[in-house]
Image 1 (cartoon, rainbow, N blue to C red):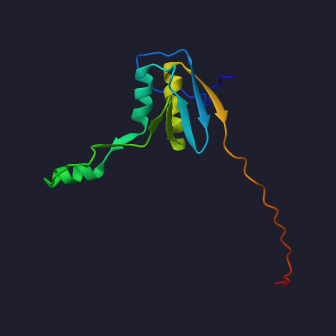
Image 2 (image 1 turned 180 degrees about the vertical axis):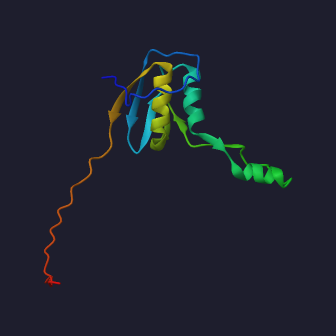
Image 3 (image 1 turned 120 degrees about the vertical axis):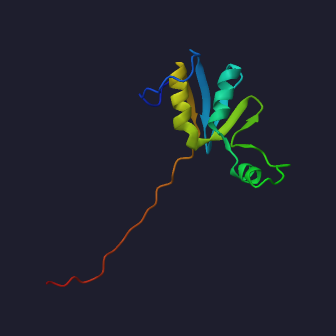
Length: 129
């Protein structure tokens, strides 16, 4: 069942619209099914998890060689037809999907936390003041 996670409005950034459903599996990471998504939307998800490599710019400033030092670091990966991104980017990804007019279809496969049975017995004696 498609659903929107948050009822917030994102500032308009993209002039493209996607009226479909973004299918995702939520585990320790977020796996987004990219087979039916347009290429520009997959690129937008990739931009969410890309940041500048400070080591590259430090080397550039010091006029050192940047051979084998990437300019950008991407924290996502493509596995078959799925894009795997960190779960911490979920809020930004949700704002992106809301902005373009799409809906989420989540399958939550996070493990249920186990309850802890803790019993505490207070054996101290309180004194009066």
